[in-house]
Length: 207
Image (cartoon, rainbow, N blue to C red):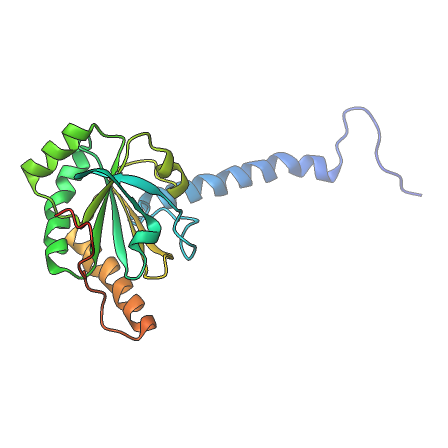
């Protein structure tokens, strides 16, 4: 009758294969890491907010002392929420692109000024121009936590019902706007059974 070999120094079949299995697992993880690092779309980080209601905020308006703006105020038409700060070099690179897009009036462009000094933010917009429909200010960064914001610039597209439809991490480029944002806007318009969203004026426009 055959019995398992229990002599000192002997190894079972499973034990003999264990190092090879560990090596194979590490090789797969390494290959996956290399593949991801070569992915040109790696900056398109997924957001758990996509398809869900935009986190609520009620924040001061940069250009109007004492006035607050909330996500409820912005509902009724799509808007593009652009996270920026005067301290952010990449925001300066993005600004001409964002300005050109805002001038098309395809959608309201809402500024989300993040952890900035009030005077610095105003000075920055005076120097480079203000493409925003209105600028909400998150001085302490508490609202940014709910939105999952961890850097600037970041941009969110929110539809008329207040649902987050798209997010982009990093500076917007003409290609990103053409190949990603505009198709998303067209999709929203199609679902709504209406032409592409426009930037209809609303009370409190800061521009």
